[in-house]
Length: 152
Image (cartoon, rainbow, N blue to C red; front, side):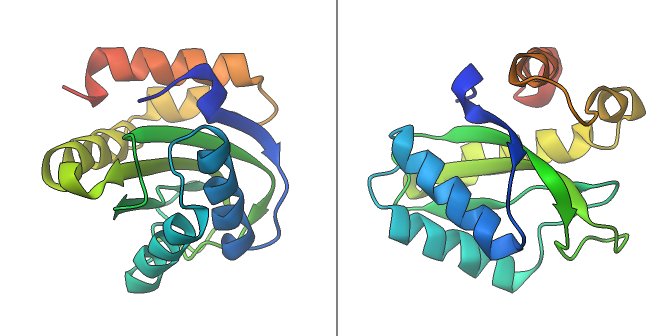
């Protein structure tokens, strides 16, 4: 679900659409999908419904999609913050991306989404997600959070 190669740092993109395109490309590279265009369309459709931007620089783009083969969590640190339509109207720097197969939509999707949203309300966790860290650092911090209950 979450592996070291699911962490991307200094991702360059000027818009939400560019970042979602990047996510779709990486998902194909990682064999999370074999339908990059379908995944991108589903991510864009979800964003059109309601922005997945939260606050304090975080967003949780997510989709339940027939284009997803394996439930996965990706983490992206953006090189420059971008507008994402967040609750606090601040630009987004960090993305937790949930990609869930359509057939796992109810259980896996809701469990992960709830766990990540809850974690992003914990000041101790948010303080650990700081700019300019290595992919290994982010992986360790997020993996520890997962072990402490994000997927329980």
